[in-house]
Image (tube, rainbow, N blue to C red; front, side):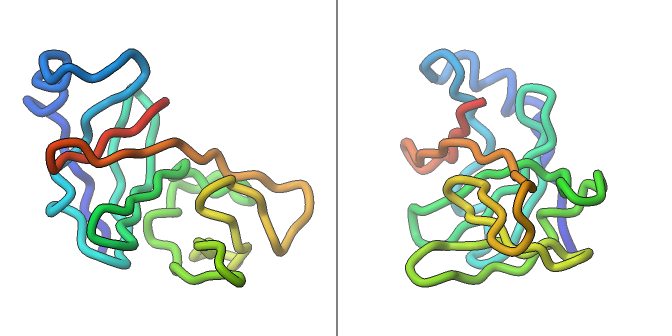
Length: 126
């Protein structure tokens, strides 16, 4: 099951949190379960977040490039060599979590966003 992180007051607080231009505070890192996807609305974009380590979080577009469905937070985490990956839950195309490159279907690209953990909070640059 994928829960959608509600920004509500957190979004308003992020304006006061000292985030640099383009960076948006999304949630506490502890709100994300390791190896599980969550969907969030960041600056009007649906983003899928994946926590792969204590302070390691990846963010990609929630929209599946192959189908247009907003399902990537339900994808399957994995790796190709040392590269962390996400497989679409629909047709299983495999994407690099860092770059958005599709390993299984040339020509497909998943938008990937920079992330950082600051003061225990996940910030995404869009």
